Length: 229
Image (tube, rainbow, N blue to C red; front, side, top):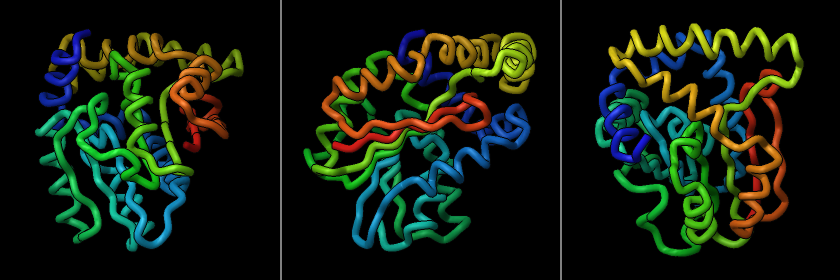
């Protein structure tokens, strides 16, 4: 799918994005995002960029946990960011800000951020290597990169059950909820085409990062990658 088509999907799905994520993950996505937010290592005065921030759920959680830090959420979908703005107004945060931008051409100076995060977003980038290089450029030396993406369970029976749901139930229900014939079909396909952890770690390394680690959540349905500039 072309970048413009992906953007159009998210623009259309913005009003029900959080609802469908929560419903189709049986609420587990809230646990994943909270755990991820707690992984950000920030101190007073730190600046963190949340790329592909969407409706700003993780950016808001990080801002709550780090009230003395500044959080900047960036996304290519203006409609998604409208819901992000509503979110921060609802919780009255003054340390998180949002702007429209392209993750492969970040509108920031080199060495601007103490941390960068991206949650369920990098698989939507058609030029992932370029995005990783951009992340490296805008991070300060010793800056932390955190990425959370979908994967597949490693235990055979768990993998079989999950893939049945993932292949046959999730696309049909998701497409119905989004009133789209392809939204969750694209989502399913994008997870299949995303590199396995070892290959993605190599991509991160090629971008210049070091001290790269990853951890599995829920048996490998989700992976969190951490790296240092």
